[in-house]
Image (tube, rainbow, N blue to C red):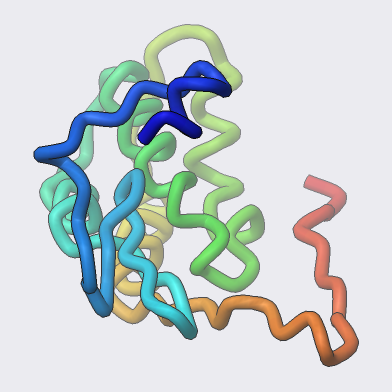
Length: 132
C-alpha cells in the first residue's frame, strides 16, 4: 500500500478484490483472456424507444457508441441517427431511423467479446473510417 501512496494513488482496502477470475472495470467485464460488456450497462440501451427529442437520441447514441468497439462497422450502422443529431433542431422520426434503431439493438444483443492481445503474435489493424 505504501508504494501506491508514494506515487500519489489512493487505495480503499475494502474495495480491493483478491483472487477473482473476472472483474468489472468501467462497464466492461475482464478476465485473463477477453473483455466483454457488462450486462447491466448493455441493458440500458435496450430500454430506448423512439423519441423526437435530440437529447434522448444523443444519450442513446452515446451509450451505444460506448459499445462501438464490440460491434463491427458501428459507424456505418448508425449513419441515419447520427445525421439526425446534426440538424441542431427537432427532427421527425422516420421508418429508416426505426430500422437503424432495431439493427443497433440487435447488434447490442449479439455483441461478441474481444480477445486480449497476444503480444507474441502479429496484429491486424482495422479502422472504422468511412466517407459518411
